Amino acid sequence: MKKYLILSLGLLSAGLAAAQAEVDPYRQFDFWIGEWNVYDSSADTLVGISKIEPIIDGKGILENYHTPAGYKGKSLNTYNAQTQEWEQYWIDNVGTILNLKGKHEDGNIIMGNRTPSGDTFVLNKITWTPLENGYVTQVWEVSQDEGKNWSKVFDGTYKPKTEE
Image 1 (cartoon, rainbow, N blue to C red):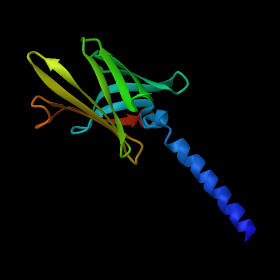
Image 2 (spheres, one colour; image 1 turned 60 degrees about the vertical axis):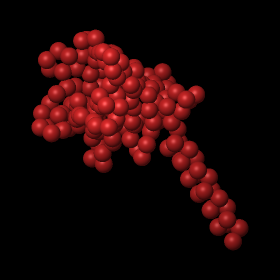
Image 3 (cartoon, one colour; image 1 turned 180 degrees about the vertical axis):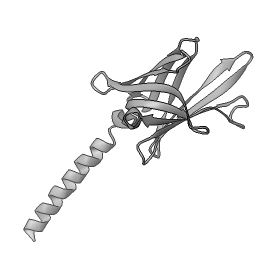
């Protein structure tokens, strides 16, 4: 009996250690790390190349994105332990700046913001979803009526470059 109790306690502590490692908030977005060919999800056409890499001892994620037409952008992503939110700062070569904040929900990362646009505001919401086949989808939606209606700006599927 004592042997089974010790074995059970050992398995329980191993399971708890594994569970703690799984919930490390700095690891929640690791599914996006890699070198990717990015496809338009509706047409399955190549729209970009993306390299996502961990930086600063895994406390940040750097995205380098470009398209065949010359568009380029970068994002810096991190988990903010004080606010318990993910944050992204995006810049590109056409002057777009996005400062997004959000959460890890049901395995997804969902970030958004409220951006001035003339005399009104635009809501941005971007959702990254890991798929079972190793792909990642990214859906960017905008609302110009405070979230009553949403339209897609981008719907992409990230496929590992090693598959191509």
